[in-house]
Structure formats: structure tokens, C-alpha cells
Length: 121
Image: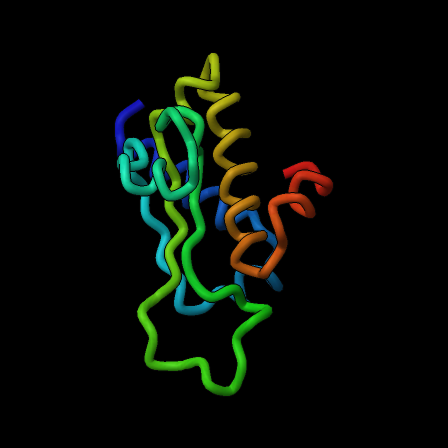
């Protein structure tokens, strides 16, 4: 799948989120990359870039206080190649993109990996 088609799926996944969630997203940048770089993999103790579908980096919304401001945007990175390699067709890619976007936005709101897995993300 080309980058533009994949990006459309990511933007659709964002658009399909409940309005209340979309309205709460602030100071966050969404990035699409092919694969995670070696530094990120080392930092997260992941052996293969194909094992990482998405990544949230920043200050979770639940931890922001009155002091929050004048900071660089948080980032949500969606990794295209691992998602594509885990799926058999465009429908599976679309479903996986929706799952990964929801998962990383869950981290933005302060949910732990354990809690997101329990919720099915």
C-alpha cells in the first residue's frame, strides 16, 4: 500500500473516534513512519521493528496540570510496514490501523499497556 493510502486509513481511524475523545486531543502530532529506528527499539527492548505497530511519546493528558504549556507536541507514531506485514488484505490493515490508533490515543489519555490490553486494544 502506498503512503498516501495508508495515511487516509489513519485519518479515517481518527475521524471514527468518538467526538468527545477527538475534542480532548490537544498538542499532539500524528506521524506515519515505515519502521521504528534502532534507538527506539533498543530503548523499548524490542528485537524487531516488525513487532512495533505504534508509539506514544509525551506527557499523558491525565498528568497535565496547570504548569503544562509551552512544550513541544506529544507524538503518536504509526508504523506502516509492521501493520501491513501482520495483515492479509486491506480490510485487515484498516482494522489493525483503527486498533493501533485507539491504543496509542489510550496512552495519550494515560492508560497503561496492561489496561489497554484488558480493554482489547
